[in-house]
Image (cartoon, rainbow, N blue to C red; front, side):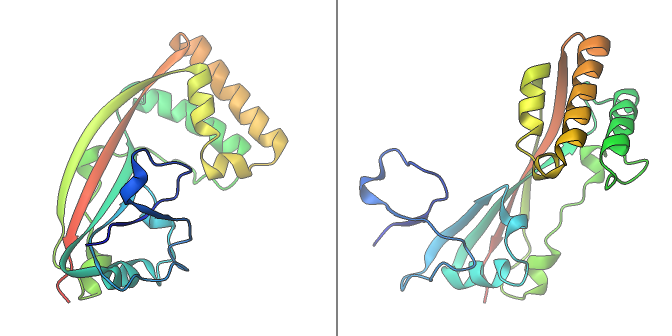
Length: 194
């Protein structure tokens, strides 16, 4: 059996027995032999909705698994209602696309969603495995994290600078230079049935 891996990174340790293909999933040609697993970590939502489910099914053998990992920002840690209200005011001020009055949900309020998979009729009902966790950030680390998000990167320079400077001031002055973010990471597994 040949091992295939579509890898979007630069290097893969121990890759002697793995073929690395760099390609957009939408344009990647399917191999002759189907996979046992198609895995996507925090990227499935970025793939073209017209392609992601059908091409994943096409790449899998019957009984193969589609495994997706998604991460949600949730209420908790430093992100209590009071802190979130303050930070949202900054987003509303510097980023006009911010929905007014936005609030973080608790993990229990985020639904387990497999509608896209089951409505394709190519996957059975999904199983979900959820993990809540927290991560502390210094002011500098948190600003670095924000600059990895496309919405922050796309802001015009003056707005981005104003937003980041204001967030830094809020964290440094009101929270002693550190915040704790709470996350929900969800593994969704669905078997190809058709």
